[in-house]
Image 1 (cartoon, rainbow, N blue to C red):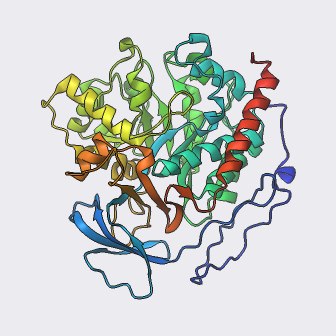
Image 2: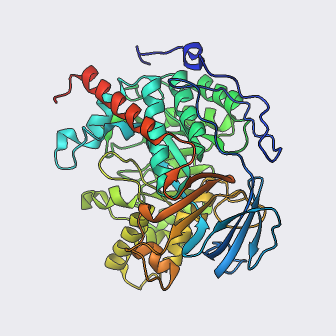
Length: 485
């Protein structure tokens, strides 16, 4: 697919295969997956130990467990042991939660992490330098190393904003090495997520996806500790949509070929619907099902929403990008989807000319909902926080693992400071999160029991190196493309 291939042997050189690694607690931490290093051996992630968060305002997002204005969360070996008041946890490390909201980490269900290097080149106000033409042009020049650096930059931004799970919508998998680069970056960052194996920018519409590559990733990467899962992202279906030819447009026969192979492997599917709705076409061909996630809910009809509910299809909305689209492309239909009982979740889309900010996403959704429908379809602030946490886990099929602070689930937790100048004094915590909070208020980020950020600093990831590597890769792409300075 590309002339800039790096062999997997070269890609893996200098890294040791992950074997049996024992943490301080004695837990087996190894992921028996391909290991990859960039400019040296990757930093070890923090060990999963035992700790208790004490005295925080706990928002469980579990309908069976009440919120606690002053509560504790006990974690051992990556799992939530208990949620309550004055929990007994002898020997556990204490994390002070006073002045903090303790809640599940945000779950971002659609994010093109590979485009994170394009910030110097995308312009929101210049059509020919918009997201689609720039990412299509530069994407075709990316090496596996570029893919790694883009995805680890995006993953680092996600963690700094309180996102503990990301759906990596990778529609520029130019080779098996590019796939390994993106997966390695997710693993090295320690983030939970689904890797949606996609086509490549510039790939002909009549060329099938890399089925062997999907099978290899499932075989080599998926026997891990559960943090990473696999799916596919599809090219567009039916009529030309926003992004048009730069993102591919498939015939139904090609859809059946690509999706059929994915389903043989047991992989979930995700699809953009940025244009005339393909829902009735897909329904007529028997292609809808609970393994399908659609993205950008802008033009659905009542009949189509009933179909989506009946088939168990989910919809991811990316409010910042969607709100900027021409009205002819539709409006964000959050209220209508919720009213119809369709599964909905929240996403970022990309971070080329805006940043990852789940708080702004919730805030914008609420403002647009009130502007369009007012109270005709009730929408609470707590429901919006659920949309960004538990509903995201439902969408990605991992609600048994994460999305709420439920004993037995994995410990994906964030602490949000309420004493910062833009937050204090706090009344209702959901009001504070949706109306006031910003990523800088996220103090602590825990994924699968590992403390990856504390006091607004990474505990293992080398912030300076991530920035330096991204800058170097972005500049190199400029030179390859002969891009104007």
